[in-house]
Amino acid sequence: MIRRIACLLPLYVTTITTAVAQWSDSTHYYIQLSSTNSINRANAKSAYLFNNGLRFSIQKERVRLNWSNNWLYGQQDGSKTNNDFSSTFDANFYRPDKKLFYWGLANYNTSYSLKIKNQLLAGAGLAYSFFDTETAYFNLSDGFLFDASSILENDLPIHYQTVRNSFRVAYKFVIGSFIVVQGNNFYQPSLSKASDYNIRLTNDISFRLNRWLSLKAALTYNRINRTDSENLLFTYGVAFERYF
Image 1 (cartoon, rainbow, N blue to C red):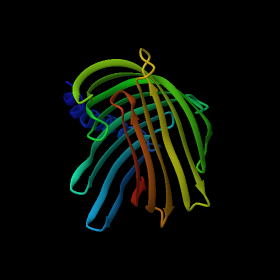
Image 2: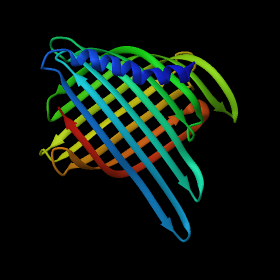
Image 3: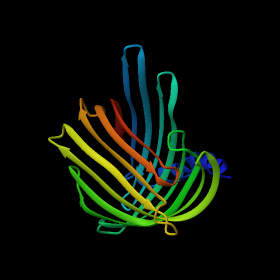
């Protein structure tokens, strides 16, 4: 069932994209492709990570739709360490002042390193932007997510469902039109069991070479406490982005 829903997400996004494209000329689009990697080889030992992402956004005056995908693959000394995929669709519905808005989200994950066979998160909540300009953005959001997961707990397959609180800190700062620092950081505890929580931290810095190409370094930390698994990743590479 989870795999079926995940497969339907791209179709759902395509349908919404077609509908939004029929709006007025004030509709804006954004696409970003990124490839950040880490390679280390010394004394006949090697380790590498390939981290590839795709993000697509559609924005009108009071609605913004985002679809992002990320695939991470890594090996160390010939053994697989990471094979992690995430796909997220979210929608933001803004009030006239654009500071307080409503959000809805659907997220599918599978992760070798975090012992997640399948995970579907879906829910909604509120967010408030303290700053929202071209050079400064700082936002706090909170809401509730339904979590349907298939994981490995003590190396045994477990299927479970729970409701999580999802608290997020998001920011983006542009320094001198050349340096961009941004991040999305989540804390997601279960409402039924305090020791069952997820932490997802993603922060990066980009150095713009021109309007569409940047050098990028990213630091990512994930912890799934129920599986007692975590990863800390540092990668670097390039990012292509285009507004139209």
